[in-house]
Length: 80
Image (cartoon, rainbow, N blue to C red; front, side, top):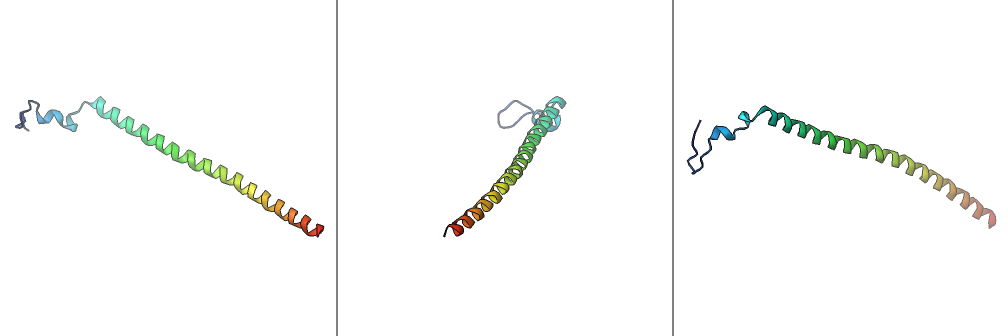
């Protein structure tokens, strides 16, 4: 490989290669990436479970509302 950069820099091109990076740096970067991915996965799962729980509650409330509407309409018919 090149030992001197021709653009005026004094660092060798092999020093900037990711293949020659210290092993601890690569492992740290992989762990950070895994942590971020797990965090995002947790957010997605948490939000989907929350939405399912809320939808069940809203479905029950809609059933109660329909039932009350039917009862009120029956009362209005009796009053007429």
